[in-house]
Amino acid sequence: MTDLDEILEAARELAWAGRWQRALSLLDATPGGFRVAVTAAEVALESDWFAGTDLATGRLAAAARLGSGWDLDFLRLRHDYLLLLRAGERGDLRDRAAGLAEAAPDPVRHGWARMYQGLIADVLLGQRDLAPAHYAAALRAGENTDPRLEREALRHLGDHDRDHGDRAGAYAKWARATELSGRAGMVPGLLTQQILLAELARDEGDEAGAMLLAREIARTAEAVGAHRPYAQAVEFMNGPR
Image 1 (cartoon, rainbow, N blue to C red):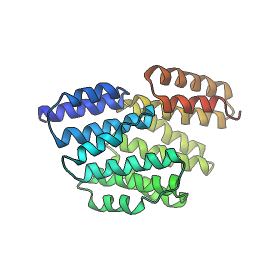
Image 2 (cartoon, rainbow, N blue to C red):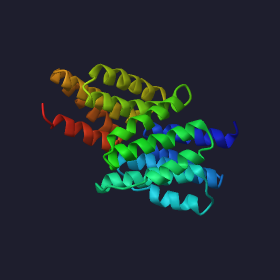
Image 3 (tube, one colour):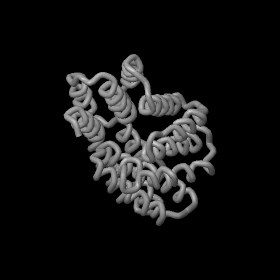
Image 4 (cartoon, one colour):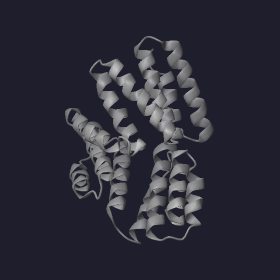
């Protein structure tokens, strides 16, 4: 691994830990052209997702001025997905996600594209019956290779288990996803995963346990500036009991 590889990986780890501005400062001080610009766009997108910032648009444009490639195209897909979620609109990104799956240069990238094929079907298009097969393919690609991808697939497969009344299956997947979040150093991701465990506790009638967990999630999320998990925890505490 080169010195540049080490810096890019350190920046990603800082971003996963919720240190988005620190990661961007590190990258902005690092020469490296296109690769650095793509990693900065990735970090900015993580910040937009968890902290509610609006950084990725400019960073994606800056990277596009320096080059092109699969990783940048996938970041654009993720960014457009986030924009559609924020706008509360339906959007059809299926063709782009399918094209990225076909063109993926390795199995893990193929798995990430399949993950977003599932998310687009599930969340944007309301075609929930089509999503689990994509999530299962993502899970196979992520197991023992990419804990973030494995975590993401388990998170959404567990949601389908819960919808079908299989709380035990949902708990097993969500507990594993929580463990993987910690292993990958994903502090905001760990908080969003714990919210799902609070929902299961509420399903099981353990309202006191659910509220205790939600309060601690909100406290930690506020402390690290993870506005999205904080809002989710507050919404959970104010929701039906």
